Length: 74
Image 1 (cartoon, rainbow, N blue to C red):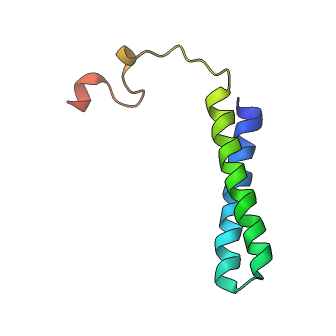
Image 2 (image 1 turned 120 degrees about the vertical axis):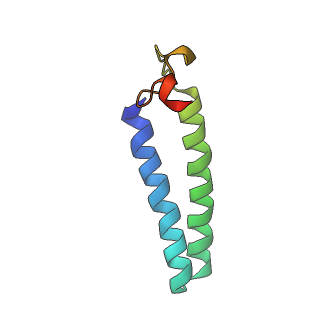
């Protein structure tokens, strides 16, 4: 999962951050609109890849949190 999903999250984040910066700097509207559409397509693709990835975990709810035991949370 991490081979494609983590870089995809970074690319999506960079695209949307670029959109915000460019909109503040007054970039041309057609370019902003293109980056806006590309960013939304990347978000949809990223969500699909994360949800459709074959990641499985051996952890169960009974294992609770890794950094706190059940007694320290209460």
